[in-house]
Length: 289
Image 1 (cartoon, rainbow, N blue to C red):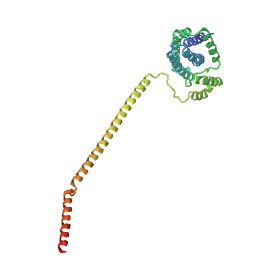
Image 2 (tube, rainbow, N blue to C red; image 1 turned 60 degrees about the vertical axis):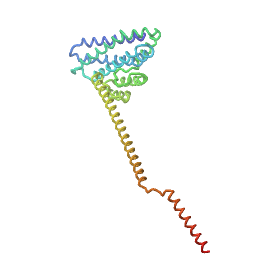
Image 3 (cartoon, rainbow, N blue to C red; image 1 turned 30 degrees about the vertical axis):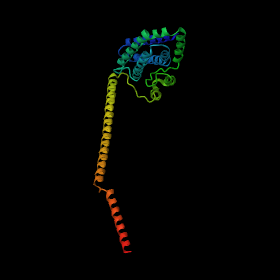
Image 4 (spheres, rainbow, N blue to C red; image 1 turned 180 degrees about the vertical axis):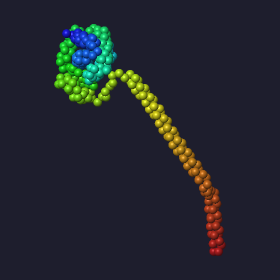
């Protein structure tokens, strides 16, 4: 069986379970529980093999399906959270049927998009041999796929190729009795990521607005610090210039106030008087002789 046929057959199996649930009486709690448990198992396996084999393959080999596969992964994420919540609810709880109904509507929307748009693109792009080989890989992977939802675990290779079989092993050990252990596996295989809530558009918008405001505030703060820093540098430069000017003025004033040295002419006159005295003294000596 090729990949498209195998996945379509899974869709038909789940749709039959959906219809059975919708036809079950309002107070048929045990019947509802049994149907929901089968839905959980079928959808968990189906999501795992698509995430491990189908989506990675078509993202590599089929043009124009990148956005659709990413959207499909997000739809899987929402479905797995709904499944995990249903798994831990009693069928007589007030919101049990409502939650199952939302799950059914979400999966039907997902199936419609895949079968009407994504699958035809894949069948057109890949050869029959490629589709057959992928179908065999999907069938083999089913044997080691988890039968319970693990919304915190990775949903893309290579991580999910390791955590998927590990989660499947935990699922096989004891079902509901192993919820605590499985929760630990989810935390370990999910890494350090926080739990992402399924539908929070308002919160996302608020977060985006907050980040934008933070970036704007940071930008203004940076500009303010830059301006302040530049002002401080200018003030220091002005102070330094004023100091240099005052120092130069003091030097000029001090120089001007110092007494002027004797002119060369006065020194020359002094030498002339000395010579005259010496000549007169010589004449007096000669006269006495």
